[in-house]
Image (cartoon, rainbow, N blue to C red; front, side, top):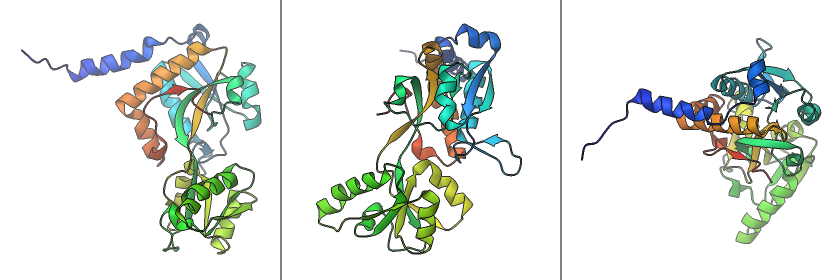
Length: 274
């Protein structure tokens, strides 16, 4: 039996043709752009380059690459986070691409194309040489923002991993926010802290040789690109385009640029958040 080798050019054409398996809605095609809501206050997901005051970040790079693959432009609209869903449902924007967590409550009005995962992660100071993994925090004091679910999640993790193994429980301290927890950590009032894993890579670049992460996130949440529930064709087109980017490695290259490979997905899903 003869073996046939498919030329790389043909393979590339077959991969790119998958993008067009799901057509863009007629109104998007006619205007030639996708209007995207973004709020640049969430590095490294969304922020402005301090040197140029221009948009940058994971979402910015991903949005530009996605729309190029779909054959249209992206029109970025800076929108307050609390206004994003309303802007989407009233059709002032076509998508929300701004580090929004896919939740069951938000799914009532928004369709999420999930493109990234993150979760609460422990970290400490590099000089704390006796703390090198999450389990080393048993019996230690850990701070995190009291405005999040993280205090309860730490307590639950401690019960399952420390107390179940006969070790002392983690002492949880609720802080006024992530910055307050970091300040207390530097002052020696905390042994470690916790914040979203997606923010820690950027934090480490801003304060070199200061922090180290411990283990992996203790739970997983999906970050989704939001599309109006009345626009399923657009959600499907974006899903197919993103999956083709995963297949050819361009998606992974964007995450690697921002040191966020830990949050990479392999298969694009719709409304996978809980």
